[in-house]
Length: 315
Image 1 (cartoon, rainbow, N blue to C red):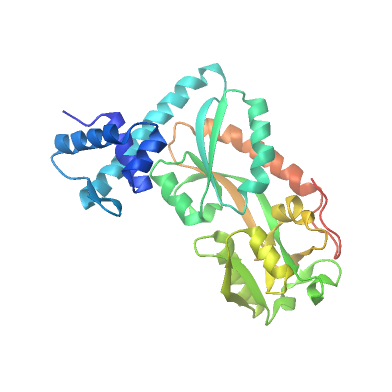
Image 2 (tube, rainbow, N blue to C red):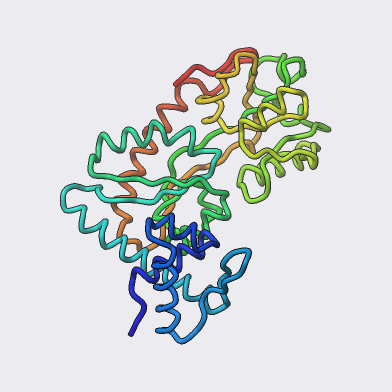
C-alpha cells in the first residue's frame, strides 16, 4: 500500500514546522491523528522518515528525500486543481506568490486589489522571504511564482515588471541631505552604508556600490526591514540605500526624511515575475504579470527624482 496524499501533506507540514503539534494546528487536525497517519506512511515505506525528540521533529536523510518528492506531488495536484478552476475565466483558483520584503509591501496592496477586480475567482496567498529562500521554495513547489530579480533564479521562466533606481537616505543634518538633485557615487566615498542581512539581492547590490564608491557596508548593524534601515540612517548611524518603489510609497510617512536618487549604473535593479519553466500555470501567471507591471508603472511614474528636502508624493 502506498502513502496517501493526506499522509504526504502531514509529513510536509511536520518538515516545515519542526513540531507535530504545530503541524496539526496548521492543518486543523488532532495531533494523535496526524501522528498515526505519519506512522502509517512510515510503515508502508518501511523506513523512519521523522525522528521524534524532546526538542522537536527532525527529518532523517530518507525523510529529506521523501519530503522533496512529496512537495512535487502536492504541487502537481494543486496545479491540476487550479487548471480545473480556470474553466470559468482566464485566471482563477488559488496561487501561491512569494516576494522579497523589499518589494512586496509596497507593490502588492495595489496590485492584489487590481488582480481581484479583474479576476474575481482568483485566490492569492503571499509569503515574504529572502531571495535565497524564494529560490528554494519555487523549485520545490511550495510557491507557484515569485517576484524577485531574475538573475538570482537561473533556469526559471520570467517576465520583467519594472526597473527601479536606488535612493540615498541620510540624517537631516548630513551633507547628503542638503544638496539638490541626484548624487554621484563619489559622494559615498569613505561612508558607512546600511544594509539588510545575508540572503537579500539588495544587500549584494549595496556591497557592489560600496566597492565602487570606496565606501564600506556596516558590520555593526544589519536591518531586518527597509523601515529599520531608514530609521537608523535618520539617527546618523550610516547611509541607507533604498529602492525607488519604497521611497515613493513609504518614505513620505516620515515628514523629516530626505531621499535623493543615486546616479550610477549599479544603482538600479530589474524586478521580474518568475515561475518554473514548463509550469501549466505559466499562461495565467503571465496574465497576472501584466497587472503587476501596470501597477508598478503607475506607482513609479508619479515622482522618481525628488529634489533634496522634498518627500515623494503619495502615488
